[in-house]
Length: 443
Image (tube, one colour):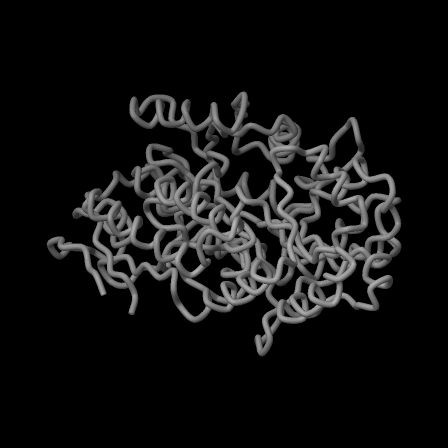
């Protein structure tokens, strides 16, 4: 067991998370000025989605106390740069910033306000997953933000030809892969540059790669929950049950998915239209089913996590920011206002407890052999079960490229997945030491 050799932190309950993230005692940020009830306020909201202007217009028309000015950013990347600049200058700070980084990163940089007192009165409007995405410890440092849940697409023609059925557990998926292997069919695609399958399975198994314990971070990439994911993925790779099509060549990727040589595809609702657009031969052969669970798991869990939007330090009207965000995410008028005028589509409002009113409409008409209602039900159930959060610690930007590198070596059979995670964990420890952040590697 290793521990960062750092002095104990003097923490108050309200500042514990912030101090953990910076490795030194944190100073309280100024309290925002309280606005008298009914007093008009104007706030700036930042994001990169052009459709958000329609939601802002609807909000401004629906009430007359809060005026929202939407500042459209050119892109996610441009917003990160512009946001850093205004936070450094402390001028023209927005009151709501769309989530572009893990919540812990926003705390590391001193960006996010504690907005617990404004979120708790409206918490019952949000899904469990959306609330989880906005919390650090028992405080809300983000606005509840919905995650898109994973479910499984299976190629029924391919399964039927191999005498196999849609797997209900990850262990069954491995066995299905072994049944199909003699015919050259692969059971899942694992791109060498994309470790998201590992992250998603670890999250679903209940892993906590990072968590807060008193005045330090606990780092654990080797726990029994993560090991469940490791065992499944190692079995898949050892037995050559996976393809390795890269996401960096989309035409080739879609062509492979469409070829009938891939049996299953974990996916999310927003990818469906793109899949239909790029498929030719397999249209109508796919079926949506629940995401496989781990054997012995209690209750259904769907992978998925979101970067929560934040109310930045310096915003003087956090209550107005939360009011707008809640309208946009949960109010029927706010959701309707997000309808794309070109396509007529409304996306699944992932922050809602129940998305059944919206899920059927996102199902394309040719991709599945099921009815849109049947696919919509799978999406609805997945969203109800989405976990919503997966803590990535105070140095995510540093360690994730290392995970990508090690994952690629695992997929190429150069190292085991257990060794890959050991290497990443050692890198995390070294980086936290260098940054002066207090931590302990779990036993």
